Length: 461
Image (cartoon, rainbow, N blue to C red; front, side, top):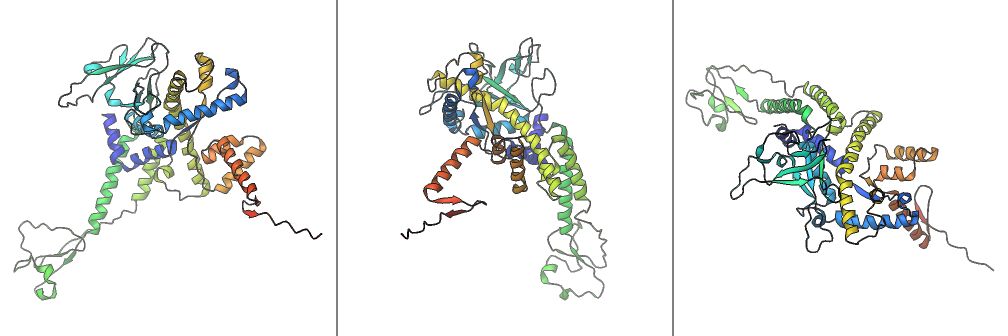
């Protein structure tokens, strides 16, 4: 029931949808890109060899991540789009499973596919009760570590013609290698021994529902008040010929003689009353002047529970620069945590599976890869997402330069934070641009302009 209410809120409640889509845009955006960072000391190679292997690993990962037929079991989304789907599924439903079946496809390099499994399908076989070693489809050992996940081939309580429900046991780790084969991404784990996740919107579902009803009621009241009619009071001296024919088209000889006395509202309508009738019209006072302060106060409470400031939820930065920047920084702390969480639970484990297959297929040679310690050193990488952005880019750039100048940061960190690109890639591109300018006899002005070198004066001798 909690998952169903969360899905309903995400689809139909404006603030709930804003919270989820804001997460998707800022945490994943166009995707978290990995840059290999081999620990060359641990594997016993020098830095130059490590850079060469890093470049090979990045190329191999791009071959897999950029092609939907390579990474997606449904051959629909590439890895960066899968990241967004995993995030939304975990936030809305509480958790999501990602299996890694082997499936050879013509024209593909790899056979490892990523299959997303919705949380509803992970349940006890045949609707059985929880046991000492199984809770809601998660089978675990005496220490609480997952052993397997029981997945239904359809949705429980769903009956399709020609298909009977069956459950498949998916081992969490490989029997021989001990490496993870099923990734379980939960929105949060807030208690020891917790086996399934709770929806991100769970704490605010009730206020979200009431706020949506209140907002809809105020909107409807404003619509009705805009359709209030112009009433016409008649007396004994009333002359019908003074009204347009359209206003009197449905009136009887003695005025409005409808039996039910019901009047229909309409835009700019004129209602003709009966002889001697006098209406009493209440002032609707719409739009309600107190709606915005109350709505904003409730959204602030919801945002506090979701760790998203009101300015971020509503995309309304109307306060001072300092207040707006503080809201962005606070929201970015939350986005950074979620980005790290997604990289740890989904991105990095899936990348390690591909490196395993690349080594097994001979696409890359990594000496000593069978050693678990060296394997971890080879698989190290940094996940870089879209940049945070800035309210005042000049101030942000000056602050970044100052941090580098006083030694509390470096160009690698600042480049990733401001552009979302790895420093090495930006640096190599800058080198190419500078060399191109030099070859064209151009040079940079102090403020970034480009002018041609002055012509060489002729030799007068």
